[in-house]
Length: 91
View 1 (tube, helix red, strand yellow):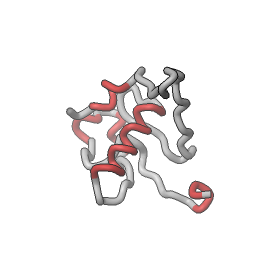
View 2: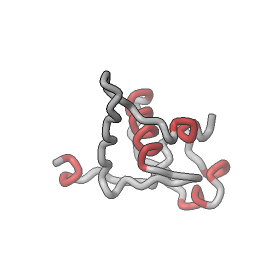
View 3: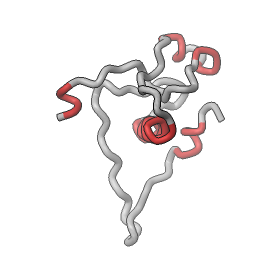
View 4: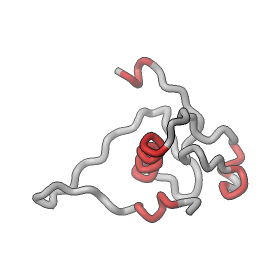
């Protein structure tokens, strides 16, 4: 599915005592694109890309993905704007 992250919106992980586990914070340079982009769906997309692919993750290179993500989408990359990881991000 093209926008599989949408199915996971509103779901949260919980521990054995059913307390919701707080989502991690992403670097400021990592911004979602596409319909209904949220931090949680972006985190799911990036985690999935890291887990399932050996290719580098660069994000969507076309700015036109905002206008019509069904046409301008690079399906090998998560739904985020193109980004570069800096030393500050690593720290």
